[in-house]
Length: 166
Image 1 (cartoon, rainbow, N blue to C red):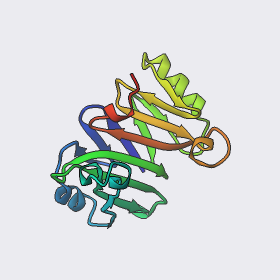
Image 2: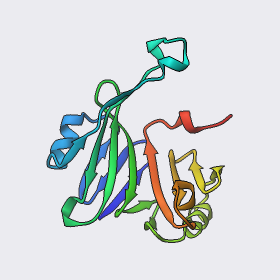
Image 3: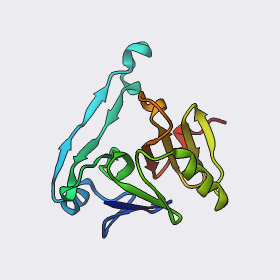
Image 4: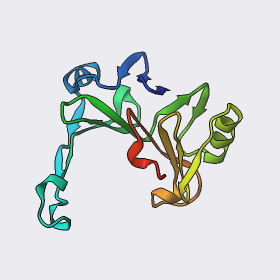
């Protein structure tokens, strides 16, 4: 399965286009309702004098093994149920500016290819890289709790300001 990431717009999965901000209901229809809903409230109030305003509401659908292929990815939504984030964990070849990134392959290859196209990146922590202008991150196996430097994670979002350190 191939995913073409289009910064500031969304992505194309197979032949279907997904735009940031599209409704959760529409996204689910496009993916034939093959999701597991994983909504939750992360209790952060205990860390902030029991102020419930600090709780984090997670709206997420989990997809696994679409199109009879082994794959695993999450789609996250804002408080109005508009698509805001994509996380790919395995099984999908990700295209960014004509660079094809395949999971379980050396992440350094993709860093070099993207840099040669003029896309600068920063290492957020060991093995975790952000492409600020393209609004995505990639991470290697070691940074995700495994071994080695194979591509193990792709994250993209409509807004990634929460990841950018000034």
